[in-house]
Amino acid sequence: MKIVQLSDLHVGGLFKEEAFEIIVKEVNGLSPDVIIISGDLTDDGLIFQFQHARSLIHRLNCPNLIALPGNHDYRHTGYLLFKKFFPFSKPVYEFENLVILTLGTARPDRDEGEVGHRQNVWMENILNKHEKKTKIVVMHHHLIAIPDTGYANVVGILDAGDTLRTCLESKVDLVLCGHKHRPWLWNLGTLRIAYAGTATSWRYRGVFDDTYNIINILDGKIQIDIKVVGGRRMALSDIVKKYEPSQNKNSLL
Image 1: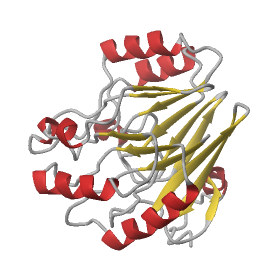
Image 2: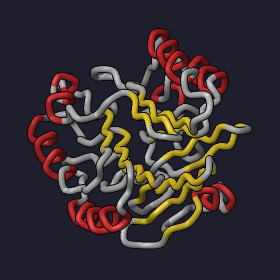
Image 3: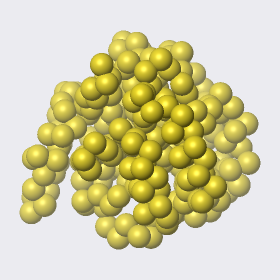
Image 4: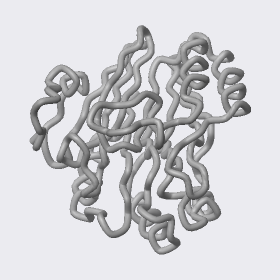
């Protein structure tokens, strides 16, 4: 099973059209089983940005395309438009040995995210029905703070503790997040939390390249790579190993 995670396209003023052109060639060449776009498809939640984002995403060839909203998509009443332009996404995707569950963390005109009690209970009920499968949960906001991203409590998930408990109790294998544009990976025992950078915008933080993640799952084992748009591919864990907070990072190319 091959999954591509794109995040934080930010179609709008800081969008890089040339980067998306490269992504189309690279991602379609990978023939992924699933493509996940983990939020902030637009920069301002405006209708012309949604129109543009939809036309771009339709160029990606994949039998399972998942798009969930981010806080930027829910600005300017964008929450009324997202489902209109991206009605194809479902909350749960079931495969032979894998289940992917998506959580809505964006709230209208708020930068911080929230899962909520009902969604946490729903997540636990769904995942407990798939004990023998690899379990992936996808959300836009980061579940745990990341280096180089500033004051996390303002724009993270307000009920992160409850959500993290649910993920651990439900034996989730992998959580995929976007939001802060900082590629990173946390290992919490059997649970890994992978963060994607921005794929197609100038909104860099910590890593100054457009990037996306490639996840390969074989016999229950998960390999997570980061791919620089138009550049190299490496294990996402290498970003963590090479992290030096005293130095400025410029490029992964």
